[in-house]
Image 1 (cartoon, rainbow, N blue to C red):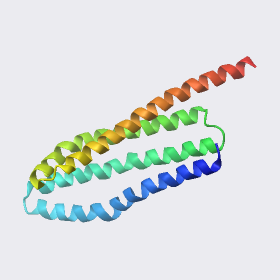
Image 2 (image 1 turned 30 degrees about the vertical axis):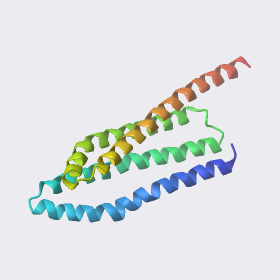
Image 3 (image 1 turned 30 degrees about the horizontal axis):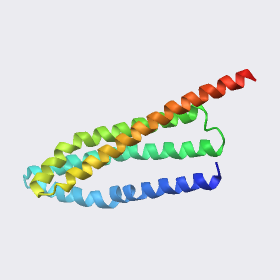
Image 4 (image 1 turned 60 degrees about the vertical axis):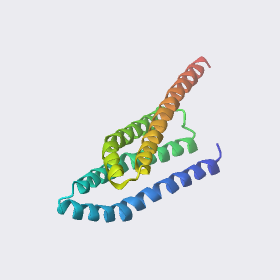
Length: 163
């Protein structure tokens, strides 16, 4: 594979990671301050929003771990060691991170539903479902790639032993 292809994918990973980082640094703290004020005034909705924001911050950790593993996988491709146990391990970590993100947002969906009911914004539930669905697709896809890669490594090893 050409180096330009992996560089494009690296750029895509960075483009995916920057908005999430900006949201975590600039957007969510403003929402947290408003939610703290609401919770201090005794509004139970403030606690719901704080629960959602906690889950959003917690999900950023596995998200960035998965992005880092994708970077490592691209480095393995550049070094021509894509068919190795290192790649399988990176895919396994990406799958685990996707499952964790999916699980966190499944836990957050009841909170999101309550906030959406109160605010009359059904689009919030849809956003939560999209995040759950996207992370589930990533998890299943990486599990499939991991299995295919393991089979390819097995075949490659058998061919190397035959020669």
